[in-house]
Image 1 (tube, one colour):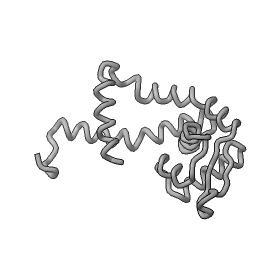
Image 2 (tube, rainbow, N blue to C red):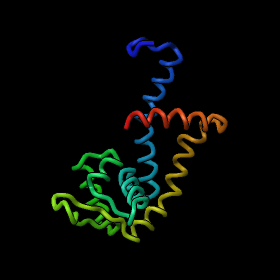
Image 3 (cartoon, rainbow, N blue to C red):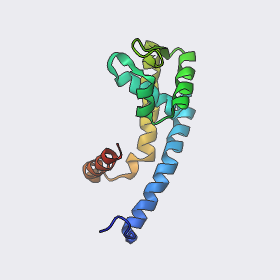
Image 4 (cartoon, rainbow, N blue to C red):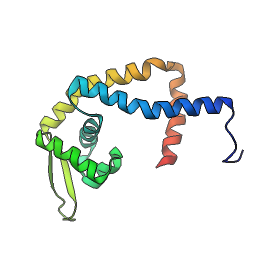
Length: 150
């Protein structure tokens, strides 16, 4: 089948549902998390990626790439977290133009405290609506799609 071949009815149905999920889900998760914890989904993501990084720190450019936020947006998010004492920021030792963000113990505690709310939202918004038997196949397929996106 050629890349520009029209979608059949089931492909179109799936594609439209996926578009609705891609549009609505981040907002719903963000609203749930903000209401339950006071954290935005972007703030939670920054804390999460820092918690998983070696020495719990990342260059700002790498953090922006992981979170899919622009350089200016990641700076605003990290600065907001820094104000709350959950992240510290310093100049990179080798590249003085770059900065490094590091998760503080208080930031890790905040992340751990917010996790149950995000988990509850993910279950309520997505997992409770997906058949358990289909999860392995869906995971493989979505990993394939995500992998080719970069």
